[in-house]
Amino acid sequence: MKGLFRKDVDETKKYGRLVCDTVAEKLDNFGFFTSDERPEYRISYGISEKEYTYIFEQVGAKEDEHLVAMFAYPERESLESKIFFFEKLLRKTYFSYALDEKIFKMFFGDS
Figure 1 (cartoon, rainbow, N blue to C red):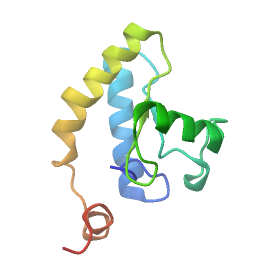
Figure 2: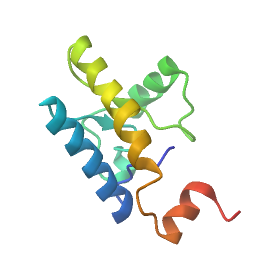
Figure 3: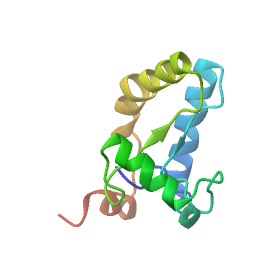
């Protein structure tokens, strides 16, 4: 799911903003940030590439394939945010969100 919240593509930027704002509103926090929010997508939060590599290693993800969502809160609030984000919101919105042909090909290729 790498690229789902890219900042350099309008559709994914809007989708990411919608999802993050929904998490923030529902849980009365500031939402989350993801591994898509990196310097190549015009945002970094001061996290170095070395730190991103460490994060991917810790969660067993591949940098060229996976999206890592990060919740910078105390453990309980992070867990509540994660559960709402993945279990309730992302599954519900991911395939119902209208993707134009360009974005669809970016995620799923030409086939």
